[in-house]
Image (cartoon, rainbow, N blue to C red):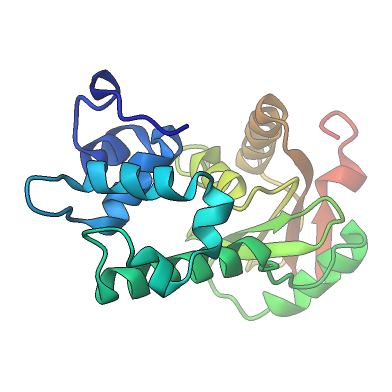
Length: 227
């Protein structure tokens, strides 16, 4: 049964969400944010509580029609329509499938595709490719443009997008406009740092590929000390 315990609500729901994150809010608080207002001498929290107590479960609330929602004092036609729209959008989000952009089958195949894709770049581009558990590409993102060196190539932004995408695997690549595929000392330091960071948070760092002059260099294939 839903309850409204004042000691659990020392701040308004919007403030708690901003401070703590939505996952820490109760069903009542989340619904109160969507309702925005209550009724005379009755807060949005009280109205949210009354709604959830009336329907008993979130599943029953999900199935409630516009007319059934309007049975609650304070829920007019506009609020009822907004709630139905919110419920339907939540259902669509829950059932959606994220688009995938191909699959990484091997370092060689992907390295050659990158060599073609990046062949006309006049500056170094560092890209990160984020993969699911079947090596399907979730997203490919350019992290920055410029020389990859020890000072600027931090794993932080790369891993931020990995976590955001719920990635299982990660592959990074950058080009050498000179065409010289041999990794620099900065390339080696960067690769080791990123590999350690991935290991620490449980992401599979698949490879770091250098491309140039229509060919590629794979750290996984060439450097057994790292992979």
